[in-house]
Image (cartoon, rainbow, N blue to C red; front, side, top):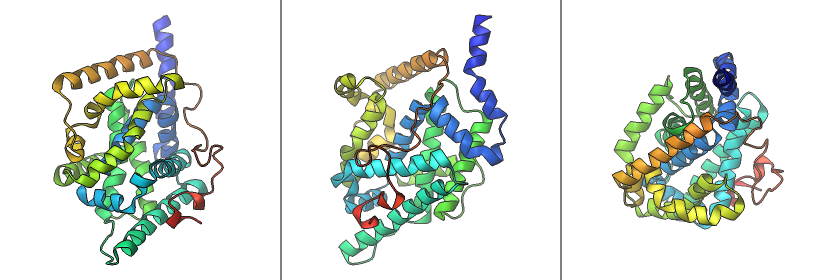
Amino acid sequence: MLGARRRARRYARLREIEAMDVERDHSGIWLLDMAYEFPWDMQVGGSVGFYHSLAPPRMARLLARTGELTDNTQRRLDDTNILMWEMFRNGFAGHRGREAVRQMNRIHRNAVRHVNGLDGEGRWSITNEEYMFVLAAVMVNMVRAVDRHGWRPFGDAERRAAYLHFRSMGEHMGIKDLPDTYEGFERFHDEYVRAEFAYSPEGAALWRATRGLFVEVLVGWLPPRLHGVAGRAVGPILPALLGPDLCRAFGLRPASPLLTRAVRSALRARSVYVRWSPPRRESAMPDRMPTERFPEGDYEFPQVGPDHSTG
């Protein structure tokens, strides 16, 4: 009887999600999953999705040319987190989500204009397919992270909500020819990885500059006094979490089969522990994202982004 009551409590939020109108409340469902059901798993998946955007050589060269990820690493990552969280937190029905995506579009346009000004040739651009891949990479890798090592996999309503939320994001970004289903996004993502991922020195440099992001996501839930030791401990397992495609793109030695199995076993053990733990009562995410520049989360959207996109 105790086991049945505990299971009912643990799955109560899933029942709540299944009772929601997915077509109308898809952003709300996505937020419940990210803030309550799977916060750590989705942060890990989001980090892997971010690294996918650094792996195609053409995209890596443009990102390296801006200098933002290599010279202003923490600010660039913080600004990305602010805008993504505002879109996740507020969806696109209200003004904050729409303002966040408008600022992100502005940053992208100004980054291309800035690089073309440096080169003096106007040869850089971001294609519709590249925008769509970055969108797909974030969504697909967050969903896959939950399916692979969450305390339970995504349900049908949650998968549909993820698709609708990210499709809405894509529409507000002005991306054309978006897939009609989550599975369509997944196929596009996997085909793009096979066709476009390759080693580049720029991709390797971007990985070295930003790998601390991944380490922080993995150990950030620990007490601060343990971050240093834990960060050094997780360094060797990063290739097992990235997977062979990203390792190849960044010039990393792929994880051995033994290490890969050990990491997967550890993640499965964690999923069992979380499954039998009480459900989260408070959001794992703040209403507004605090950063080093904005510790109180008191930013205005025009302030978020590189210097050539703000002010």
